[in-house]
Image (cartoon, rainbow over all chains, first blue to last red; front, side, top):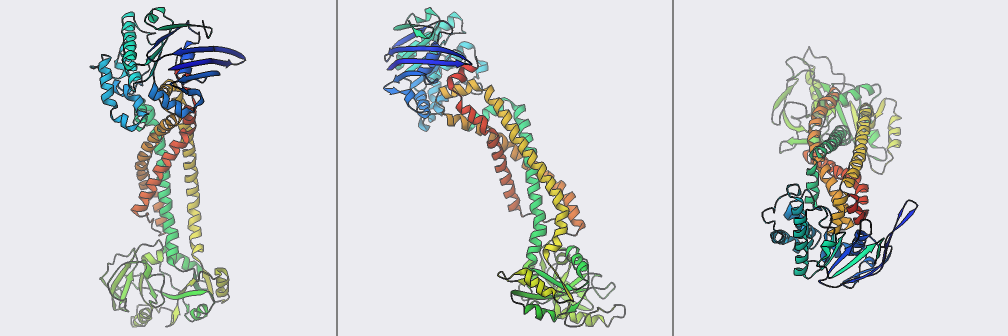
Length: 221
Length: 399
């Protein structure tokens, strides 16, 4: 499903060169739950962004479903992200001017017109699935942190992605909500048969992972 | 995309409305200036171009009088031999020559109105009066008919009398912007000679000062292939006449208005440039404010072009709103213009001819397109920059 080969990312900040990710090799199979564990600044979010086609690697390849995504153009990657990848970020990543249904349906706006026609209906089903059937038309400012995260999870699932990338998805949530969100993510990945890649600094969240890799100083250990 | 852009604008209503108002002021100025300029140009340019004559030949010494007559329509009388028409007609390159005879009505009971400007013309050769007819009777013009200028109160079918002779108002001219044509009453030139004879029987009417065959002016149309300057020069070789061109007449009026228009246009350009810069500055801020959201949109599948289009769309909705309000403001400005510039023109006895509604609508549409262009230009760089943001940098930028 996902093959990382010699993946590296080097930043230049003024005169200083920072190796954020160094020569990462990793394979993730379909339906697998892989946790990338590391401290703050270890390069785990950068690694996730390169896998998700959001940040260009300095070296190496990211092959997803047989496609080397960084050898293709921006248009392809945009479509690829839209169709094949669901993102859940470490902050409340909702558009404040859209209600819950519209936020969940947002990826459909950048896809096919036919899919857009069913967007609201699918968004409502997903919100129901994440337990927000009574908050469908609430705006993000009217939702709690946990509810916002559930909306973001529903949005990540709207196009039935093959790969779910979650970057510290429970960073600012209390323990109970954290458990609910993690359970929801894991169950959704299983239901959709999607590979689930979790980036976290919390060892507790990696309990159910099929594969746990540690990142330190940008390199896998 | 449109809906997303619209929602973004609703997010900060005060900023949106202030920006739209700024655009509205500029577009209102553009719309009003363009409409007034078109109207004034129509009054001057179209009027004189439809006048149809490339040159006007008048008696030597009548130059000031003819300018006054043309511009203000004040009755003015001067005469020369009509035989000059033959000489001019014989010049190579001259297409048409038609005579006009100027006379005035007398105060008192002999005429329906005193001190009116009567112009005798030759229907057989006329090419300048009848093209302006916009109302007329469905029959041929006869010697017992007159044609009323656009400013006259007479209507088609009315009966008027001059020096004891009665005439039917055969038709009425559209307003031309030429005082002479708007204020005068036109009759057959032969009838004008007859009137001069009729007037002699009234002891209180002074002699008209011309004989049958004399004319006040000869209107000359020069062929397209001919060299106008050479023909004017050839005509002017006759020491008894002066040659006047329409350009001579309008120049002084244009000069009076040119400074006013130049100032207005300069102010409008400054306003537009200021608006483009303002939009650019505001949308650079907007893009920075929304870096994370733009990154998120990229993460869920928006292409660079989608982000570019979103920012441009937002700016264009804003300027379109400003443009629509601006056109409304422009209409109010036009009413002010009508009272100021319109009054200035009226003092010269030149009516301010508003462009037809279709053309005003066209100016309105062009102003709206202009507003959209301002929006697109102003937001172009911020939108381009927004499209180039690396999604990951944008998402992390908000942390």
